[in-house]
Length: 371
Length: 81
Image (cartoon, rainbow over all chains, first blue to last red; front, side, top):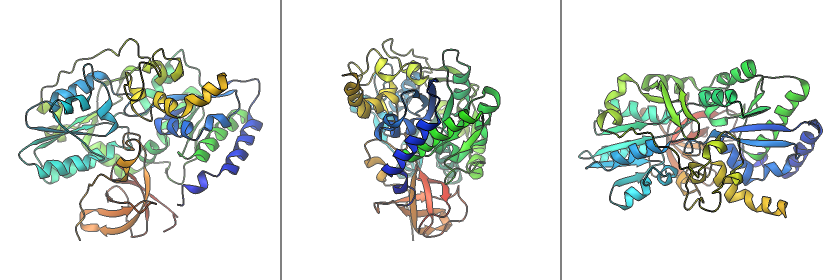
């Protein structure tokens, strides 16, 4: 299919790897963060880091929607799911994320009516098909997913579906990036910018990174050649002394984003004053709640939720992984107590999480390299 | 013609939930239901799903849409029909 095959060509990949090698300064150690979990997944799946010179290090960022949900929010969701008469809906990977005592899957096994959906529109359809039940949707995701929740709530309001509500955990990408850039223990040379988030918000919101922090950003697609080309573009900016936002994914991402999606989001959501991110702590204005016009659909107002902050398990180092301070395999429980089957931390639950991606695709290569 | 949103699409038969993964999939429009703002779309494997088109400008049969969580978030210009 156009947009896929030509971005997986092995010969072009080798040629790009040679160009990257020719661009780097051999005396400098480069650290480049890929913000988006989808990029992390592709990097390990296609072995992109094996094509890079040893002095170009990829650091995995916080852009995995599942990985950043704190345990307290999972507990809140489970408390609502256990209310009599409730059908609780959420996306698939979220089902396996541990709360303080159990996951949504555990709660389902012990009797809660919890169903997996692929779109919030599926949750609304369940509500319309079950008018005598209350249907709650546990919304997660960055700006890529938020428009679909907004559109669903608009539709629910227009159709007068009163047995539908939403626990809104949508987060925004810019505040955690700013928090990372302010972090004293992190030295980064540039960013592979998020592709699908930028489809909605555009590349413009990333301009603060070169303007205020002096780091280049290249918005990237998700195919192997996309990522290699983006890394090359970042290295070329550094070599030429430039520092700006470039759009490698221009075939999909308009610089101004999707204005219709932004309008719908502005109508349905409002910024929360602060929100807890797993491993990163509280970040101001980094998440969305339902706007006053949609308060009737806010499950946090409709139900009593514990709202208790729960500290991450001591053994878990997801926070350091999400900040790129340590590599997944440097975590004490990686691959032993914490595996995709029995995850302690969220980074191991979601395949976009750096730990799961490395566990599934990368660990054998590393073992070989160590030997 | 009536289209319904919803059967769990190809997204959920992957090894992970692509909605959680912030992934979007290029899908070709096969049929339109303009009154309800819906399009029946298929991916490269000819698997079909119903897609909301409210967030993209005019859509025609043969267009390629970037779809996330059953919502088109962008139309891909110049894609092969």
